[in-house]
Image (cartoon, rainbow, N blue to C red; front, side):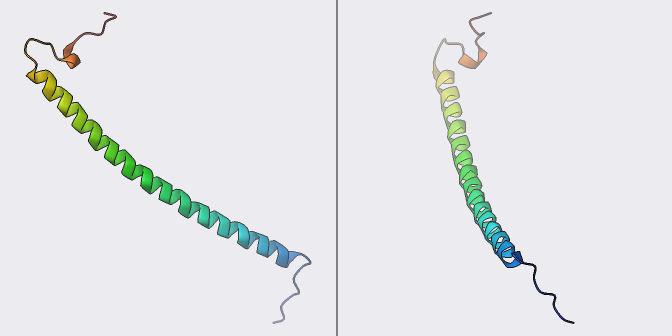
Length: 77
């Protein structure tokens, strides 16, 4: 089984494809790291928001004689 000689420029084309594939693999890894970091940031911010909402609800519940902000009608009604 003899190998057929490569077409002119086939080696160059193969090298270009391998370089492009390596670039895409690196880009995929970089983007995956960004997604992981954003997921952590989103979880952290979500926890902070929950704490702030709970603190505000507690503050409003402790204020005597005031209607909780969540129970007030918007000004355009």
